[in-house]
Image 1 (cartoon, helix red, strand yellow):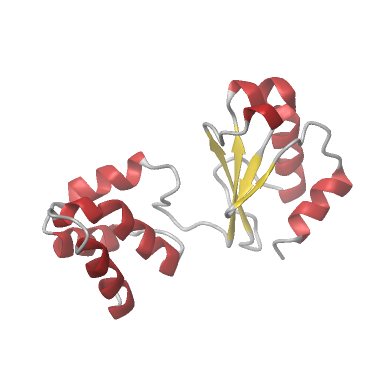
Image 2: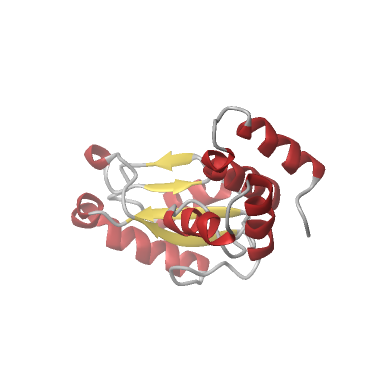
Length: 158
């Protein structure tokens, strides 16, 4: 599948902000991911062609940023912070509860396609650790998450 007219138009609008079209690589990846949920190898090639750069250059940016998904993910991605601050304040317990509740391991997607569980190095909220990010929503102060509170949080993403 090549870039849609909507994706192409949005990427071209971003390119107009830069002297070098390849400077819009990150934004181009975000645009495709917003439309498709992830960025396929084919999309990387299409982005590279539009930006006038190599597929390898676009792929290197895509694989560097952990918020660009290079394989299909669930409708909602849960990023669990695994920084030292989160780890010492109960992050391991939070991760274990999520894995048990969702029936998946890190890097997997729930059977219903609703959630993908991924680690993330830092969410920048160490003073309120442990934390997780679901979509664009940060949930913090989770050191005493019980099954009911976790279920309440996950229900928001039905």
